[in-house]
Image (tube, rainbow, N blue to C red; front, top):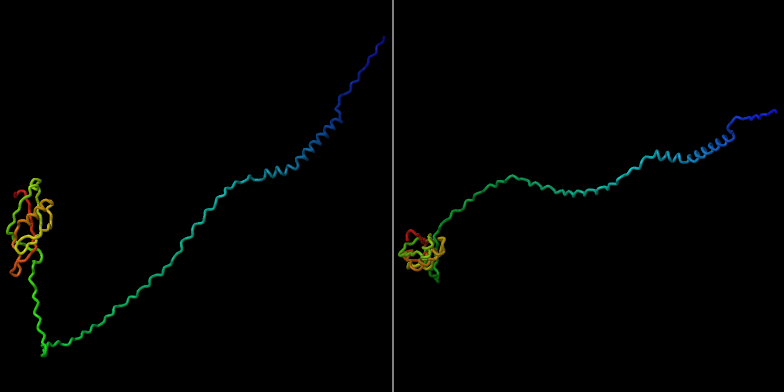
Length: 220
């Protein structure tokens, strides 16, 4: 029995042109939408890229203006004193008339005035200044306390001596450096010393005399 065989016809695989066209159209539309969306932002991005960065400025306060200088006071210069040449005035000497000495004339008067007797000054009672008088008696005793303490020195006294030669006042002119010796010298001169009185015009008068009193240990 005869057999029959079936032949299978295979067609070649070709891309679908419709599908490709659709995909291409879709891609084109998406690109056009993207370009259209980016168009407004392009100038802004370019302006941001072109604008310089902001500059930070520090504001410095202006210092206060300096005070105005003090006003200048102009003082006028002193006027120069004109120097004048000295004027020489001639001196004229006038001769004085001669003096004629004529003896005084006395005319007789009915009521004669008695002549005034001359004034006689009284003799001085005290000699002027400080004199030097001789000693009649000048006993001197060394004070016991001063002798124990080895005191020595010279006391210069000013003594008022009366008409009889007795001291009536004693003043210490210069100290010996020890009050004990000064006091002892004054008391001893007042108590027991005698002087030759001063004489003026033949009569005894009071007088101040300078009397040194010396206390020396080696003489005792």
